[in-house]
Amino acid sequence: MAFDLLALVKDAKTIGITGHLNPDGDCIASNLALAMYLQKALSGAKTEVFLEKPEKAFDHIPGRDMLITDFPERAPFDVFIVCDTNYERISGSKKYFDAAKRTINIDHHISNANGTGEYNYVIPEAAACAEIIGSLIPKDMLDAQIAELLYMGIAHDTGVFHFSNTRPETMRICANLLEYDFDFSRMLDETFYIRTDLQNRMMGQALLDSRFHLNGRVIVSSADLELMAKLGTGRDETGGIVERLRNTEGVDCSVYIYEKTPGHFKGSLRSSSDAVNVAKVCEAFGGGGHARAAGCEYDGTIAEFEEKIIAEIAKQYS
Image 1 (cartoon, rainbow, N blue to C red):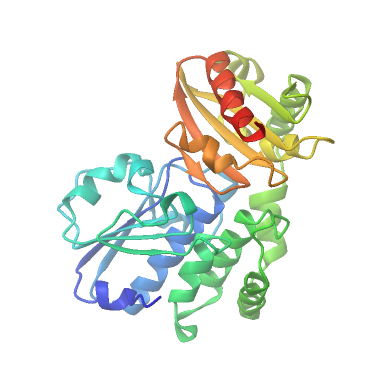
Image 2: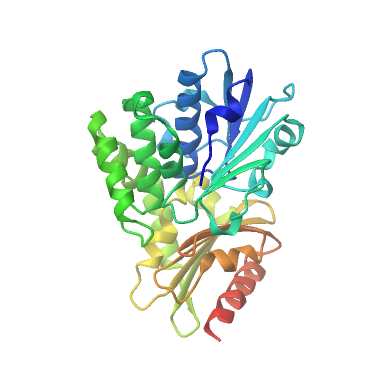
């Protein structure tokens, strides 16, 4: 599939880049790596990255200071690029997309197979959006910082090469990235493995409060604003919970729900087998993702959200 990114942006003086709500490691890495590359390749263009404020775990990654975490008014961009998602999930950046002279969508989600930009490059078989971004960057434009970001994005979206989306090609790409001699062990510890005391408290509470559905094949836990206030926790402390729930014996699918703002909830879903396609579940709520990892949001109550999610999962068992 021919896609010449530089040809599409070479005349641009202003380029904007964004990703999805609640940016994860792949989203953050893809946005920053692409921005760093374009800054090197196009000396006359100004490139800006717009994302919601990431979790604290990402405070020390390369390029973190490039992120614009509010969404100020801007003159229309010559080119606006959406990475790792579709138009519906870019939140505060929609005004930039709508006004841009040219739009590009780069993604790997099957739920966005056709793309939502004027120009689209969607590779559903890619393990991560960072894998696609890496394929667009010539070797002579790579450096240790870009390589670290690309490795981080791929590692995060494969569960550090544990998920079934890890391909032989994925490992070959990462082996090439390691030639750039960044401290991948430290980076993975800081962004994926290490948990603060508050995160451990949140994790413990989630495990204590977990409940089973559909004859023990689905496990669910949740936290409302009242509970998080009691624990002294917030969104930064929810990372990793849904993955830990998924590792429960006999479980095909895990669900973790937390309240973002009063009456507005975020749901994260993971599956450990082909029995449940969680992307399909989340699409019913306007969300999406991968067959094994997806997310969605809902206005109402936790009980309603949980009931509706379980009903969608149950359809796949019938």
